[in-house]
Length: 459
Image (cartoon, rainbow, N blue to C red; front, side, top):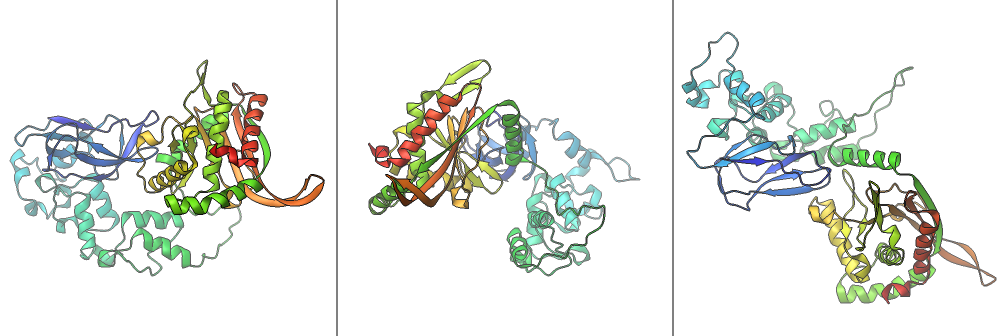
């Protein structure tokens, strides 16, 4: 019998949430088959099987947070005995073994009886903890649900299928998915007291219905109560958001930041992009953006000021030969930084192509672990939000980060004459333990010069 464990998919990963099982109990599994999807602290990844056989038992259901190296399932042969699982014992064995109040202990053979003979007693129906929780929150009579798990055990999918079928819920309760209920709580929407049209199967309310309602529903009148603070929602920090909070707190509290600011004349950059974009669009079917040009300028400046392409680990000042520039991308749950490897050697067209691919993957949770590792520097751009300038927090273990603001116009004196020029504010935050002001300033000036003379980006 082979154990399937929650793998450690990154240095910072302590646990993962099972998002979806691709196999069910009884399915044949070959080495390399995708068993399940897991959400780590950074990305959603597919976990493949290292063994062949039959999926005999699933211990952890979808939606459960599982510590790394903990057993989540077993793969074996049809007649192979399933070993006891320390992780599963507290939840499963009690559920299967504990008799109802006032009853004598049932003989072991009783477990082989058809589930329908046990349906009169909810406490003795075999059901996973997650399925029981969903059923209780939706007021589902589990005696009416047919289980598809081992020995007729009811699992999450059975409850969801029962609700989606339009089957009546006890007490005439509203049909709503668990995710929709959670979203409603976070947005402060009482779905019981307002009419929300469900677009799911059988009129079931899903997450999109809650979000659509929140956008058109008027905000409830707030009742001010002296001495009390009205709370709209409480959201526990988990997954990516939890890791971001921990890493940013660590960075700010342990890394002495020095922030250098500069104003770059972007007039020529705008003209250069105008000259490039139509030809590039026509030939490569890709759109060149200012972000692509900034990424290229940053990479070239790092090559010229290689000491900034570094990190401090213990007592070692490590300067990297590879210039791998990370690009901060905003996603639903926070921020992720995919990497453009050897960015200084990439043409602007290649950078644009990779940017589009990485952003699409990031926003669809399709980034591979290798695409978010080994960055040596990060660029974060908030110009598209109308932010003119800001100071960014270093992304450890890197030693610096570039912050880019919007392009704006203002009068400037050029050769003794007043002209309207376009400018861009940029700043670099450096780890002052290894990058002093002079190093950081030379690096920043190099970028300013490249923005002012963008033809150098393609030479």
